[in-house]
Image 1 (cartoon, rainbow, N blue to C red):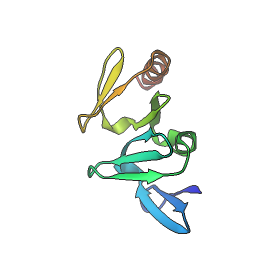
Image 2: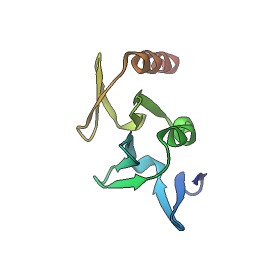
Image 3: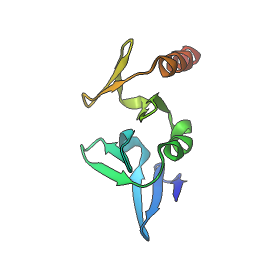
Image 4: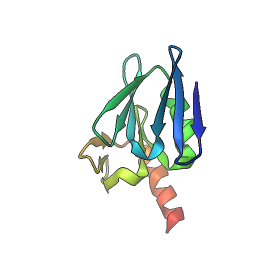
Length: 114
């Protein structure tokens, strides 16, 4: 189960195995789909494994400026450093492959901001 708690800072509450975890949205750099889990990569260089589907995180976080880079990664736009033809570089140095379709969608979204 995933849920957003809005105060004082937007935070994800997730329940797994009867335990509750709390992650501030602003601390999530990107989330990646692995073989049998998703992995949240945080600003403090730690990672959190989750059984939740990537699409569930995206649906929860899309209103908090998260975007797909490709079908295996969503990223927090506030951590975007550079955008190239087929990749993006995040502020922590991580490079993510950028699919043509997601690049087009991202550029359209950026056009709305300008």
